[in-house]
Length: 67
Image (cartoon, rainbow, N blue to C red):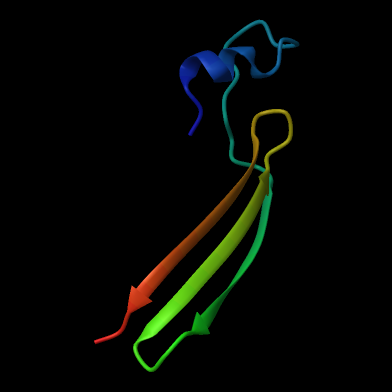
């Protein structure tokens, strides 16, 4: 979610505060690799685009142990 300051400055064409509506799209993917019977690696990537309001990329990785 955008801070109030970022939302105010996101689009200067409006005289009042800019409201974030959440219109946009997101795409992503990921995978998991077994290193042994219990140990695994997981990775994911996400790209979001909400026009002039917000754009971003996020990558995450983890190592896990199954009981």
